[in-house]
Amino acid sequence: MRKSKCLLPLAMGTFGLGLAEFVMMGVLPDVAKTMNVSIPSAGNFISFYALGVVFGSILLVIFGRKQPLKNILIVLVSVFTAANLLSAFAGNYYIFCALRFIAGLPHGAFFGVGAIVADKLSDKDKGNQAVATMVSGMTVANLGGIPFGTFLSHNFSWRITFLLIGLFGFAVLYSVLKLIPSIKPLPDTGFRGQFKIFKSLAPWLLIFAVILGNGGIFCWYSYINPLLVKVSHIEPKYVSLLMILAGAGMCVGNIVSGKLSDKFSPSKVAGFTQLLAAIALAGIFFFSSNPVVSVILMCICTACLFAVSAPQQVLLIKNARGGEMLGASCSQISFNLGNAIGAYIGGLPVTFGLGYQYTAVPGVLFAFTGFLILFFFYMRYRNQPDKV
Image (tube, rainbow, N blue to C red; front, side):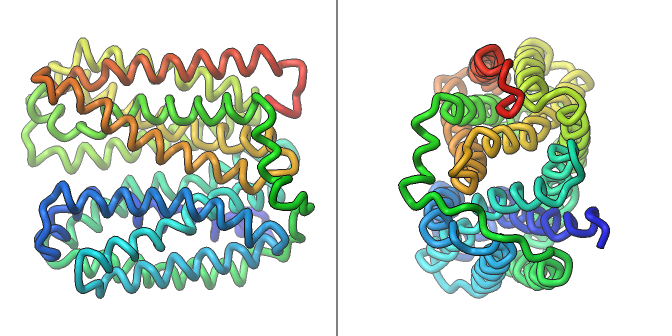
């Protein structure tokens, strides 16, 4: 069987996970109306999903470390499918919160196990491209799936959106069963053994780099809609089209970074990308009043957002010997923490009466600090090729 076909179920899985996580932002008002709650209260649907991501990664270490990798993927996809199908029929706020938590459980775990599987199934020196192929599913979700899901919600019902996501889970499950070969479990280092990775400095540096890098971009990206409308003076009817363009930037950034990481090193690519993000965010602060420049910088930033994803995922696996599952899952935990922190910190300037272009200011500081951490990481471990 061609190895490219083996990566298809992983990309399909991240596509579904990307839909389940990010479509909530687009359908939030519709769900809030159905559940008879305020939009701020409905924001808990996002928070409960993020909590599920964290707990799911811990549960993976407890119950999954001795299991064959394909079996783990089957269980994770099954949970994803059931949770999203049931979400389409949720009758009240509390049930939907619980289902969002359950739907988040497979997220980080799937990315963690999937990255290990992708690396094992890849050709020699093509591991970064293989992980980027897996991550591409999420970028495609942002490009087309999420706008389509939002359209269905606005024009028909948000329940149809979640029903389709759940049904898509069956396609993912079938592809995993048919295309993923049997892969032996990773060597079991015990429950405590998994957490020994945190005795080393390297994983901590990478975790904080992910939090700050993603958090820096989400300081601005969380408020992209009002920034484009109120600062760049773009008509609201064009914003949805620009979101598709932003998704295209994610796709390009992910593909390019995967190839560059195999040619150079994932630490170099991740570091350069975070520096580029800091520069682009600074440009947004100074030049976002120009609509053309604002859109160009938007595409650069969204490209950077996913250009760091594959290399940092690979770096966490490489620097988590004996705890690869937990290390790989930490990438998504850190990503979600970065999202939450970035959205909060980015909103503070607006809360104090400043314009939406000021959301990029803390983003610059976050992204540049992430670059400094990765630069320090590279300088410290540059003589250890298995780490950088």
